[in-house]
Image (tube, rainbow, N blue to C red; front, side, top):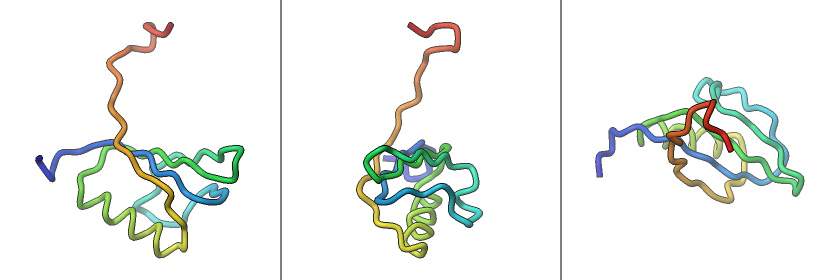
Amino acid sequence: MNANRKRSYQILAEGTITRIEDERLSAWNFQALGDGKTLMTGPQVDSSALYGILSALRDSGIVLLGIKEVKPTNRSEGDRR
């Protein structure tokens, strides 16, 4: 496994979060789910940046429920079904 390879991630957190004042999370999308949780989706980052993001979330007192790598799709905008 190449630790420097960039990957996209989704992080599930407890509570409704609209944004976090941290430069490392400025490009992340926050989606409030109907069950009192928030799904955060981020751009491609390497493992070092991911650990920094997880630290920022911890420092903000956010309870993490899960994290997963998001595979990029190969479908173009005109290829939706």
